[in-house]
Length: 150
Ligand SMILES: [Zn+2]
Ligand SMILES: [Zn+2]
Image (cartoon, rainbow, N blue to C red; front, side, top):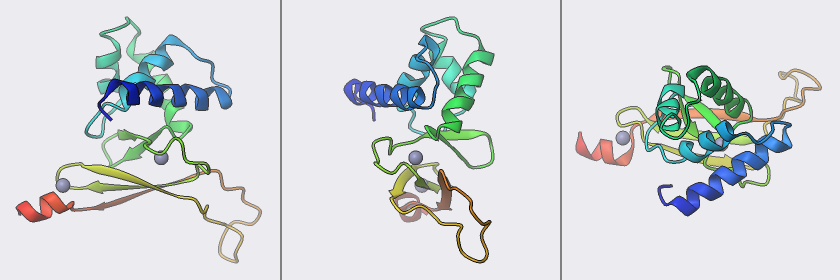
């Protein structure tokens, strides 16, 4: 998502989802929502702060705290083991529940799928009466481009 209309729509959806979970619209949240869909590769709070600090003098701690809120609301998904994230690319899915992120271990290309069916815990092995809210799975492997070049 590199064109600015798409990223504005994306930011608007983020702000609406945050609001629906009780997080008010703030300048910092707007700035973060505006930059996260522009990253081509997984990113961390520091990368977001680097971009946001060009527009506003918000400190790193504030960006970090809000980054955490975005992550808690499933707007950002953790990938890999280095504190990196990708922006959820399926904000408009009706049942925003099961996110599957495919990530190439060589080039960090990511692509997300959303399945509508939530996993259920109501069988003999699952915790009983567990209310599933969301599920994020990372699937790692080698993308077609990397496989072709090796
Ligand atoms: Zn997602
Ligand atoms: Zn690759």
